[in-house]
Amino acid sequence: MEEDGPKEETNEQKLYKVANELLLTERAYVTRLYLLDQVFCAKLTQEAAKGTFPVDVVKGIFCNVACIYAFHSQFLLPDLEARMCQWESRPRIGDILEQHAPFLRMYAEYVKNFDNAMDLLKQWTERSAQFSAIIQEIQKQDICGSLTLQHHMLEPVQRVPRYELLLKDYLKRLPPDAPDRSQAEKSLQTISMAATHSNSAIRKMENLKKLMEIYESLGGEEDIVNASNELIKEGQILKLAARNTSAMERYLYLFNNILLVCVPKFSLVGQRFTVRTRVGIEGIKVVETVNDAYPHTFQVSGKERTLELQASSEQDKDDWIKVFIFTCRSHALQVSSVETEELGRRAPRWIRDNEVTMCMKCKEPFNALTRRRHHCRACGYVVCWRCSDYKTTLEYDGNRMNKVCKDCFSILTGRTASEERSEAKKRGILEIEAAQFSGSSLVCGFLLYSEKARPWQRVWCVIPEKEAVVLYVYGAPQDVKAQSTIPLLGYSVDDAPRAMDPPCSFRLCQSKSLHSFACESEEQKRRWLQVIRVAVTGDVAELQTAGTLSVHSRPLRHHHTPKGEVM
Image (cartoon, rainbow, N blue to C red; front, side):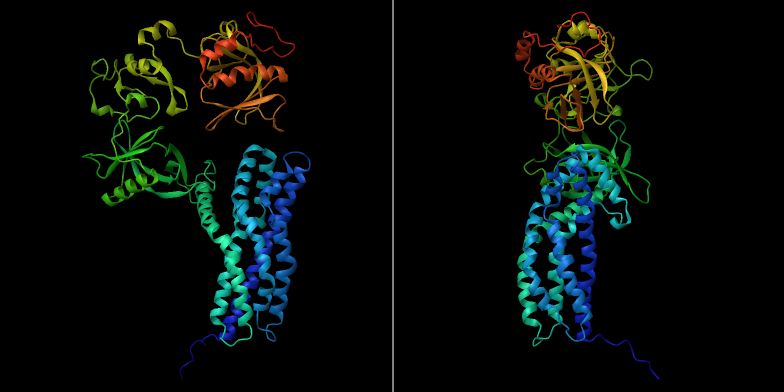
């Protein structure tokens, strides 16, 4: 006797299944709302009341999530619970949804504020250690399910479209003459209107989810989780070494504003890649290259770096080139040669070691012992040590000092190589005595100093007259060598008070560099900023005028005043 196969679900069972799914997902959703409102928001509000960070920041992040939580936990969920208990006698949900659907319009405010909420969250996570610590501590709890606050904040944006999909599925299975059809159709109209506020944002949210996944795969080090960022393309590729053309495995993430070149990490969980190179998209150039040993190659040249890459096939190469062109919009394919007006502003393509046998400047042949190969960081030429024994700041490398050849040194500084040798006398930039500078400085004195988030330390700072756009940091007034130098050109100045910083503080910011200083008094701070605000613009003439005003900083109390300082 043959056994009967599995019985097909009746239409009534399918309707019950959709209604029950609505209830189960609503329970889970209310749990997430509780986490946002009663845990994250409540803990941060409690800490903000102590003055650690502004209460308005917390309000700006969570917007009207308290109202959303109250509506779902006190009204919609209890009504759904009660109805599912009475399903045999009242098998319908259209009346409940029609009653509550108008309240879903409150989601428009939450969705509209979402981008601002993400910006505030990112900003204050970086700015306030206590703010960040509270969030991290909550994220470790089981209730978070190993997900970040950003992930949980996505759920209200996705919830209304979820109602729309479930209700459409319910109506599809509802008989045309069912008593519940009229109310279900009316509620669908209202919910669909509310969903339009979310649908355009959901694409952004999906993009943010992807950014979060990449952020975590990079070990949480890269600043990419931003509503304005968009992933364009990702994939494996080979990078050809600048010196010897050996091929190295890399993984590219191309965003609308930056290219990340990553090295794979052998890890089953957590961080999968380490970022090796960052290239800004602005001004990027891409060109096909011909390499007999390595087919399917092309070159990407940005201000920071020039890379030669090898795709897996001709089609893969064409896809990458097309997407680079699309991302860079009007930038056409062209060979990236560093012209004089771009010298120092754009990373050069390095001439490979095996492509030359002699110095490209003095024409002396190379050998393994006495005349080795060096690369000019400005033009990319291979030169000998004599022709590369010069240093200057390069804009593409954040105005840091780099080795350059004698010709590039002359173009970039306006000084001849012989003048530089005579003036420098082979001494490094840090090997100038503090006392020598202090006696002829625009401003000098003791300050508290912190680089990035490192502990504060008391240092002797000098901006000399002859190098008016460089801030020298010494350990003490009589030190014969500076601990570090800060080329001020291009830095932005932020002197707004911050709760976590000492009084009378200010900060110098450029890209990812952050230098924080604190003065003894507001008057001392004013004097320093009077010089620094001009120095960051590079207006040397105005700085010399400032120097005639005797803008010198008094040292902190109880310390010896070195010879040459104006009191």
